Length: 144
Image (tube, rainbow, N blue to C red):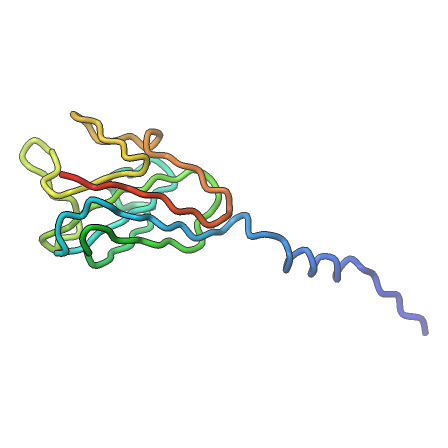
């Protein structure tokens, strides 16, 4: 009996183990401008503008203890493509950015690309950055 062995399964296995992970990466968000080491820093990673910047639907959210003057949020397995990050310094424990009667934030906040329009919320396309499958670090400065 003659057994025929093909190289296709072996080749597929080699490619699977040696190909770079182009669909997943780690994203590190350095948050600067933290005025006081009190409360929590919330980092929300958005893959679309549907709920950006204050909504939580579809966002991946990480909460960390606030440390002044800087902290870091990490997101694992981030798909390649366009994303935007929204940051909030929650001082009172309600895990949201509090606003005044005009809708203006009363707690420090920031978004990727450090976009800060004066009379409206930042738009997803203004804060959007690209990921390509390799580890990436961005810095977002928060302020009131």
